Length: 233
Image (cartoon, rainbow, N blue to C red):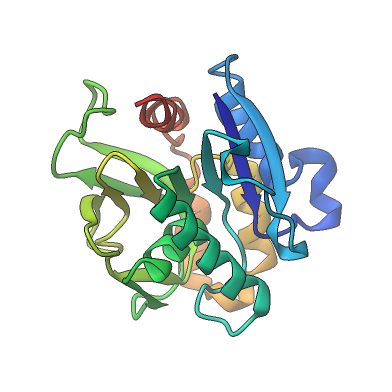
């Protein structure tokens, strides 16, 4: 299976040697656990898109520091591309910004959350077991870094998992679209770098609780396997 990664942001230059760019994180997350997956990267901020939607079998939209409701030409183009992918029946996975962009493009709404910044480890809990789920606990720890949230789901989407802080944390549309607010591709060290960089914006209380939460490991293997299982159908 060939997966097209839609790159929607750049990692800060000084962090790239340690962590790579966002597509690198997803290639490690998924490719290290599924050797049959191939990846093609499209930098949509630079207007890079496939000439043919069927160049790849499925698409994954990365996270970003931008908000999906910002009036930027590349974001408008991405939202239109999502609508094309959906109409064409392509499988789509969205992570954080990607999760929000899919909702925004397909009839939902993303807004800045009254709850403020979500950082560090959060726990999201499933309310049902989709076909790609495992036999593990319904609750799982995941690294998050977001101020925006999906407040209205995309048309036809159902919420599979959430929390009091983030009700719409994992959503699905049929067998075609899967979106997660959390970051399965992040490692704790990268999460800490982001919190240190945004400390003033996050606020001292949220920064302290977020950094302390990194004592718990995220459910990286589980989340990677969920995405792989979803992609394989």
